[in-house]
Image 1 (tube, rainbow, N blue to C red):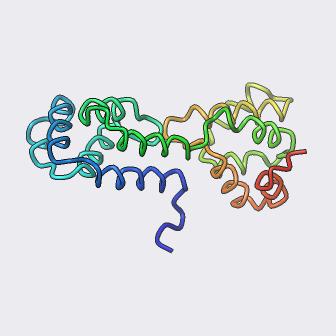
Image 2: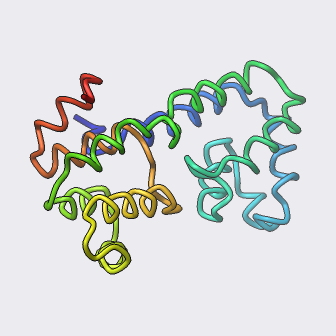
Length: 189
């Protein structure tokens, strides 16, 4: 499968960009290139021939990512004169991504059920070893607080995509099928 190993959030982000590419007119693309002049520079700006290419350059310069869309949304709104068909695609993407607050039940469930092997799970989420050590040092005798602190660090990581799918994938990776099934089914009791 071509998309194996790619998170649904990453795939939804790429799909959004492709859908937007089909909606953006050449005149709107030119407006966007002017809007990005100070970010891209004239030489790079003049080489851009498509909306997707513009998005790649914005990603390289940390002005666009799944988590950072402020500049991008402003650019789209201004350069398309607020076209609803374009903004609807952006809003659909936002609605697909699970918000951090939506994971309170899942993280509370995991805090209470991961147990002593919690570090394997956090590593599968992408939390660095030094961060795990910091959580342990902060709460040397309280495993639940260590897990809670590690979840907070995971959610604050700039590149981390905080999603229900990320939790499920990590649970599969560490072979915690019991917890995977409960979260997947929504049975968190």
